[in-house]
Amino acid sequence: MSGRIAWLARRAARILCVLLLGAGPAWAADAPIPRIVTHDGRHALLVDGKPFLILGAQVNNSSAWPAMLADVWPAIEQMHANTVEVPMAWGQVEPQEGHFDFSFLDTLLHQARAHHVRLVLLWFGTWKNTSPNYAPSWVKLDNRRFPRVITRDGRMLNVLSPYAKSTLDADRTAFVAFMTHLRKVDGARHTVIMVQVENESGMYGNDRDYSDAANHLFDGPVPAALLQALGKSPGNWTQVFGKDAAVDFSAWSISHYINQIAQAGKAVYDLPMYANAALRDPLKPGPPGSYPSGGPSDNVIPIWRATAPSLDLVAPDIYFPDYARYMAVLDHYARADNPLFVPETGNAAAYARYVYAVLGHGAIGFSPFGMDFTRYTNYPLGASAKDGAARVAPFAPSYRVLESVDRILAQASFDGRLWGASEPTATHEQTLDLGAWKVRLGYGQPQFGEVPPKGNPSPEGGALIARLAPNEYLVTGRNVRVSFEPGAGHKGIHFLYDHVEEGHYQHGHWVFRREWNGDQTDYGLNFTDQPTVLRVRLGTY
Ligand code: DGJ
Image (tube, rainbow, N blue to C red):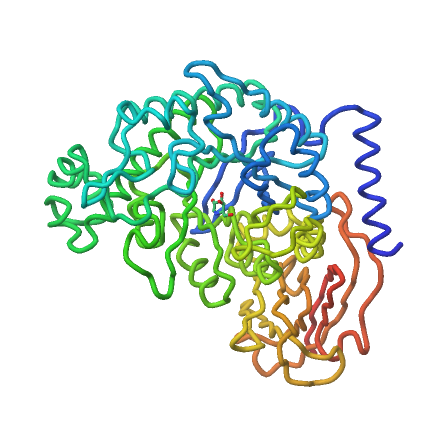
């Protein structure tokens, strides 16, 4: 059975199962609640008690309505995503104060279960790309009760101030109502595995709020808990943080606010929660305000982690297509105290290969933005194609393979036996150090012969390698040559590919298709644009 036919058969069996049983997926009823665990500086998102990899797809902002879901599911299916990220807008669920409407959430849950995908819900509340545009009208039009940020020169920004208790109370009340409903309708199923609290908080064009309330706090002492976490001596914000005082003050203020919302939500339903960041340029950062000052940008991660313990992580939205910037962002956010998750990235073809490097950095998940068939495209951030299928196409082949081995990879990542890389542009070769072995990745080589790599016509290569046993590896990749070699501890030995099998996993069991040998292994393991999984056993003589 060819890979494609086998895959179709698996898919058909799953659909048949739903039709016959008329029920939800196998992961139903009373499984343990999702949570994030950390061991030896590595992290895992446990779903149904086991490490899970989010192979995500985020829908467009205005696709979170029942009538739009028909344009969502075909994209998700074609992409082979296992998780969909969908907004949950404050204005939509509480159009009138105290009157809640969770009918969209109910519809979404029902349809997500039928499509066998998990959900990450995005709370668009006080902040959505810094503005309150997703807050209800009774909030965003009442500036007296819900004051906005004031700039240094006295202008009002379309950003709610994080110092107004009335705003915090109103947002928190709505968020708690949402989490309470979610626990009621999904608490035994865990279709929803994580919640994003707010969206890209901070403020553009300004470094901090200059309202009286803000000035008063800014001139006062830096909170002792923050000083202790950062190992700093007491003083006011300027004394402690110098030239960074304004952005650090904003980061503390916003993270403190969001933490209180997350904490209250977790008190009713303890799902993993995170906040996402609109990034500053990681290589040539501009001043605060050129990026959202106070949001969880790379310069203030320690402040966010110290001030918002109810958040499991802060996450980068990566819209830098170039390799150097992308890797710099991953290095900033993959930390022992911060599980890496990429909740948004561009949906142009150049981004598709980054799933390999993101997972190679130990991430719990990856998700391109704007994956539906509503014909909206956020070009030039993402792809120019309005045709949704064209946007999905570059991501689908990798997702199709990764979906079939997601649990294996997630466990390997948590154990520290997963490596991955994406095609760079300045060079066309990379080396991964696996300890006993090392791996050379070459991009843009013919499949036959020792010809120097010259890069793929457009950068689209990548590879992932998981160690299954001391000399045995699961290898997958796309448009890349993967060549094993003895590592540092193995120098001077003779080695060969003892056994290379191509196949696929079905319900966690390996299904053999063929053996690779001869031309197929004499010049490394050459992955094309066909989704391929190999199990490789190395030997010495
Ligand atoms: C990042 C935001 O978080 C998304 O909601 C969206 O607005 C994109 N930017 C741009 O398409």
